Length: 258
Image 1: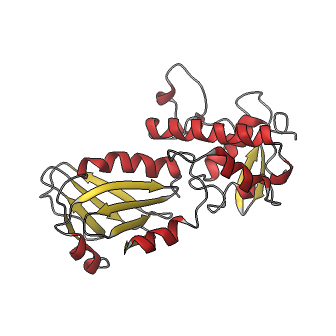
Image 2: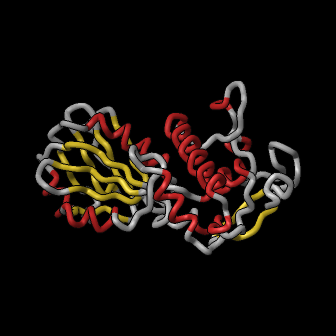
Image 3: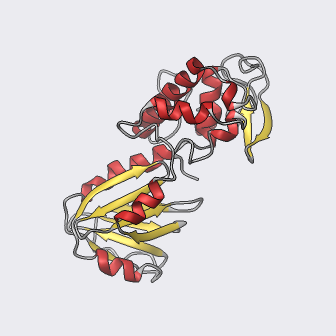
């Protein structure tokens, strides 16, 4: 499933439609009624929040998209090009078309519907104004392993399995340590590391936690320090693979002993 950096990157890219009167259709037919209401509206802004994307229209409604495990957006320079039959939603202006395929959710919401979705989400490290204090308070009050708490979108929004493994490695914390046992300093550093890692991933277009002269040239299999690695890329110790919070967890037994 795409992590939060992917959604924020998409919002940045989709902003080329902002301010345009958009043409909307649902070639697949599953969003035909919603697309008809979007068609001819002005796309005022695109709001990413965790793993959710909101396309805010001037007609008082918002398209809410969650990509889930299989969803993706495809961009076409030629908006007259015929869409694929499986496209759930096409939004286009005179210059470009964006096609949404296989999302887990694509729905039209009013302001109250948007509030219902966002009120259930924790702070997003990539959103402006997402203060550390609220995130730290949620983590400090959670009895679950920190590795499980980080995957709960009601605790922090946008953090997925790659970021939780790499961020915990960066601060030297074992993924099964109870979240509430972390010190305030550790939680503050964790929030800061997540903000930095995720912001960098938005710019890079992928998650790279290894430092190298040409980071973007690193093969995907070599771009993380512990996630899906045989050995820790800092100290060389064999990476331990377990299950935490229902997902595969990776940690260094030397650098994450506590």
